Image 1 (cartoon, rainbow, N blue to C red):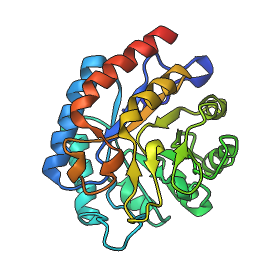
Image 2 (cartoon, rainbow, N blue to C red):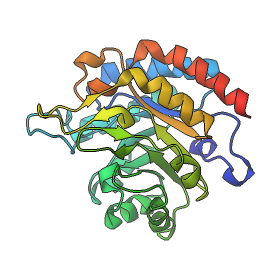
Image 3 (tube, one colour):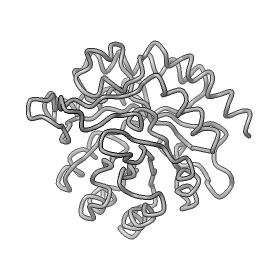
Image 4 (tube, helix red, strand yellow):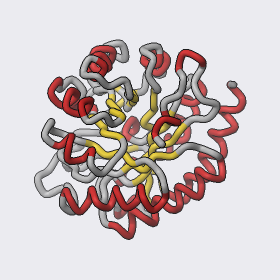
Amino acid sequence: MIQQYLPAIKNGGSSQFFLMAGPCAIEGEDIALRIAERIVNITDKYNIPYIFKGSYRKANRSRVDSFTGIGDEKALKVLEKVGKTFGVPTVTDIHESHEAAMAAAYVDVLQIPAFLCRQTELLVAAAQTGKVVNIKKGQFLSAGSMQFAVDKVKESGNEKIFLTDRGNSFGYQDLIVDFRGLPEMRAFGVPTVMDCTHSLQQPNQTSGVTGGKPALIETIAKAAIAVGADGLFIETHPDPANAKSDGANMLHLDLLDGLLAKLVRVREAIL
């Protein structure tokens, strides 16, 4: 099932971008299923291959009292149920090497957080599961530096790799996207994804809660498609203001249909 998300890069890739989307964190079974159902209906309408995204646990929180999850096994079972209910692949983050095999039993794609993309043991452990490995580019790295992360996974026997850009640090409390990085990473022979929501974060706020600029999600997404991104990553929620994680930079779920309709037209225009 996941093979359709690994386009033949050397031949120009697939005719349609794919989408990784869902809530930042798994908040519960009911809301995860409701979000997935709506996104499946929308992506089916536009013939967009879809991977459901949800973190089973959030390890990189600014404050100790921040929401981190509903319990590892419980959240992973929710991801598994989403995949089986709607027949879609699923993706979740892992943070330490011992988590790779555990998460791989429930999901199709293991995601390496940006701040961990240089962690060799983590990359090797993810690769050895045989799952697709989605490596997020560190905010502190150039696009060219991600070749070494790709090499670590390939040299561990796994050719199934995505690279995801989520912006570069710009001062202490902002990020900026250098769109030159997408074609540069794509030249490594792996599908390249643009994270349209985390790239608009405003990290390190004095409140200890990350801010964001969700009004610019459409701008980032359009530009990414225009420069040839294979996929988009979008965190979305029916009530971002009350989401338990990263609500400040999420796309409201009600806006996803209209956004994807525009992006399909952009994709058609450049092919």
